[in-house]
Structure formats: C-alpha cells, structure tokens
Length: 328
Ligand code: SAM
Image (cartoon, rainbow, N blue to C red; front, top):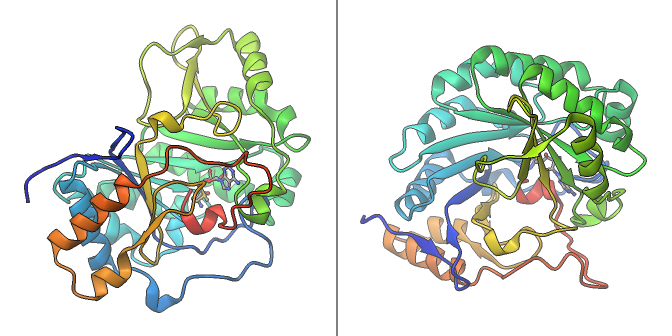
C-alpha cells in the first residue's frame, strides 16, 4: 500500500495513535474511574493481537508512525511483551511508547526494552504514601517507584512522569515532585484534570498557570528552545538544560488546533477526540471481512470528521466516557 498522510478537514495531520490494550486497571485513581465501576468491555470484543497488528499496520501506512500503548493499565494485558515486539517491528512504526502506572513495571522493564519499546510515561501524582493511597485507592507508591527505577536501569528513555495536579490534594507537592524528577533525570509533566465521566468531573481541577509561575521562580526555568515530544505539552527547563517540565493544559489553554492524534479502544472503537463522541466502530468492520482498502477508506472518512475542538467547557454538557475506557 502506498504511504499516505492522514489529514482532517481542519488541515491537521494525524500522526499519533493512542492504543488502549485493556480497559482494566489495578488502581482506581479518583479522577479517572469510579471506585465501583465494573463496566468493562466484553472479553470477546477485545481486539486480538492479530487485529491490533493489522490496524496499526494500516495506520502506519497512512503516516501514523507514533504509537502509544495505554489503557486501563496496559501491563495487565497478557502477552504485552509479545505485542510490543510485534508492533516495534511493524513497518512504518517509528516510535513505540507506553503509558503505565508502573506497579508492574519492575518485572517488565528489561523485557519491554529488549522487545523494542523506546520509552515510557509513568503516572504518579504524589510522593506521599497517604496521598497516593487516597487518590489511587491502593498504597501503590513503592511498586511505582520500583517500576520507575527499573525503567531507568533498563535504559528506557526518556522517562516522563505524569502528575495530574489537583487543588487541595497534591498542589503543595509540585515543587518536590519537580526536584525528584530533576534528581533522577525524569521529565515531569503536569496535567490539568479533564471532566471526563463522573470521576473526571468530580476532580479538584487546578489551572496550571500559578504552579507554572511558582516552578519558574523556584528553579529559574526557561522556555525550552526545541520542541520535546510530539504532543501538546509546553516545556520549560533549568538553565543547564538537565531538568525539564511540561505543562499540559487542556482546559485553561487548550491545544486542539494542533491536535495530531486519534484513540483506539480495546474493543476497536476509534475516537477522534477525547472530549467528543465522534467515533468509528472498527471491530465490526474487521470481523465483517472488510479488506485493507475498505478499512483504510473508513479511517480516512472518520478522520475527516475529527472535531475542531473538545467542548469540555460547554455548559451542561457531560462527557460520560471515563478516561480509562478511552485510553489516556
Ligand atoms: N494506566 C496507565 C497510566 O496510569 O498511565 C495508562 C492509562 S491512564 C488513563 C493515562 C493517563 O491519563 C494518566 O496519566 C492519568 O493520570 C491520566 N488521566 C486519567 N483521567 C484523567 C482526567 N480526568 N484528567 C486528566 N488526566 C487523566
């Protein structure tokens, strides 16, 4: 198949696929999913590795070379190392990464690296045991720290640490998290909570402008001259360039005009926007015998309908999907 590019009707080039390999998770982060939520995709509807490989191959042939495995918690999907190996070797996949809470990473890091994974993003919102337990529903701090150190030892790089900043919960820890990341050469990324599902709407949203000003003062940060990563984060760095902090502000300063991604759920639904319902059901097409050309045509048509922006701030509008279902 000839290599093409995927461009939506607003002129944005789609180059990045977030691929959820499971909607299950061993944590219950309060802003992500409700504690008692059990509305999982049916096992029979999970895309098989062969189906995932086929879709990733089609996306890659259309110029979508960056793929991030996510979930739910992707390390809970049985055979994840084999899948990483297959996708890392797929023609056209130029950058394969993984988002994880790292509770299982200590036992997987070296094997993931050997299988061809380039880098990881680790979610950690606090370095305080009580805060982690309260926020994630489990005392997972030691496991996550062990996972982070194993990733570093395995040579996965860069390691980005994602911290959702929450008013009155962990906002007092932003400087200490930055110091921790600088010490270990992790790139800190601060994220504003999005009102996704009931869990996200209940989150104590904190706009990042004040935290950014505090960090700039405390660490004498300067804007990064070069763009880091292919995503929405705006990066700042220490004077020696060794410490970096990215700010992801989907609410206070949204970046929809440069959005370059789409998301595929574990049951094969392609979402065009985190904050809108536009979607394409690829599983039915795959299992109904669609040819590669038919699948590619359906994907192109769906991408053309990618909305210009989310509408999280529209009054009275409630997005029901949890982040854990869409794949963060
Ligand atoms: N389990 C993996 C992890 O912990 O990174 C991958 C899935 S998780 C849904 C991906 C990212 O989404 C995490 O960094 C998490 O903090 C973030 N996230 C979840 N719900 C969110 C929300 N309502 N607003 C902003 N970020 C959210």
